[in-house]
Image (cartoon, rainbow, N blue to C red; front, side, top):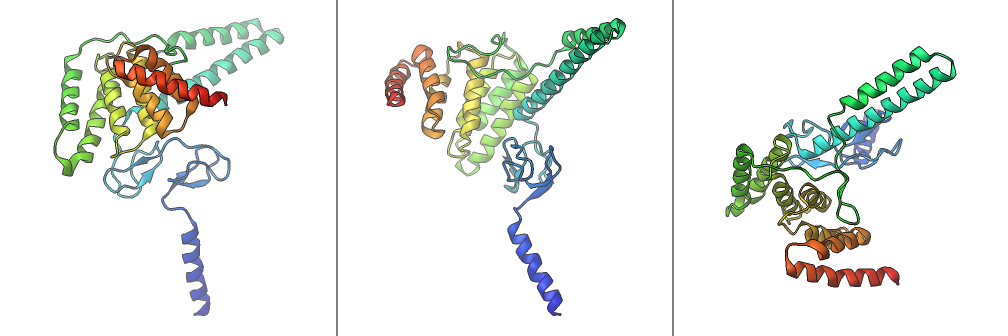
Length: 291
């Protein structure tokens, strides 16, 4: 009886020391890791941003398709596409590097036929690339990593955007967060399904507003959304540059990012008052950085 009692107490103590929400092994070393963990305790791998279940508020890995708390299916989101595209680009890069090493090896071994095959395979892979890595944030001068999208009016995308806007503007305070979450899903649907719609930058801006609101306070996500808005449409009518600067400055305490975005806002924000405010804050931050 005493043995069973000790075993029971040991089990309680062990359970108390384990992080809540054990979900799956680390993708790098297979160590069991809590869903709420940001790093693997065994290999140090940094996990992607976690997400919260809308049904039961359980925390899950960003890659999770189902909630371990209630079993609800997570909807596909823009972050899923970015993560998977980045993984595809990383795997493709490794494959191309290996092919080039093979071609060099065959040449050194005096096997020109195999070297030609490896080079032909390399060229075939490079020519077949259709899915590109996610665009980087605007640089110091406001230029994106690639050309801005050529946007066009798409009726179906416009309809989804209008539906999302009606949810975002709903006066129902009791269901406010629920409606905002649904609006986010619709904005993301426009971006994923109609990537050349002239509403994609509008959607990114609205998503930034929602993520930066008191209902979510997901400031890193908000900043990324404002970055996308500017990247996809450098001539946007939204004050995305100034919004990004404020988040980097006051919410994330990232002085270098704030300076960069205030510079962009001072140059081309569509709101004159924002340009003046950006210039003023920029001078203060630059002075502070020199001290």
